[in-house]
Image (cartoon, rainbow, N blue to C red; front, side, top):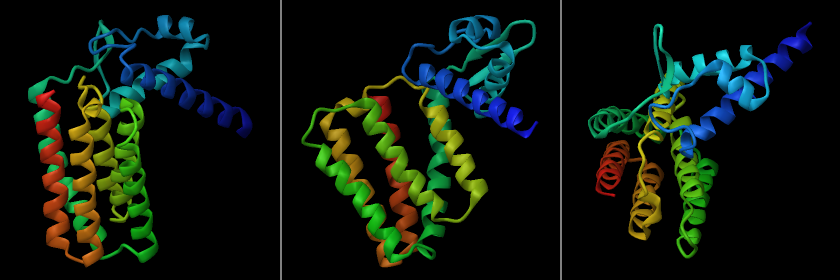
Length: 216
């Protein structure tokens, strides 16, 4: 009995990942219908896991549901993007501040390794998906060091929503270099044990990303 439940949960997660990937890569554009029967037929699964996956997308802010209309991929315009980053700026600053008093030498080494990987890739052709994932991995690592689960969950939801905004930010070398420089500043503040500077660096990075997103 438990096995069947586990299998069902795994299927829901698999369907959720597939739909989320299609939203992120633009296959399912903002405003596109998330028809449960249509998705189930196209993904060759039953309607139940698709229905649960779509409900999760609504909870994550990637989709909106309207009675008698159904679910659609959420639309993130310039104004909403600004609102998302206004909140992210404050919360990322708080996460970095809290991480400052908890981070270990080994964890700092792990953060520096992430940034060195980003630096190494600056000499290669840009890859939007890869570079965005490396950026998210860095921020997820910093936030996890705060030890504040509700804060991490809120920031993950904000990051997920920001994926809806169509931008070629990561295709520009200067934007990639700015991100590395700002990541280094955050780690340096953590390493120095300067919570105020860690807060400022994380906030400044979020503010800079917003400007670069809107500029492209």
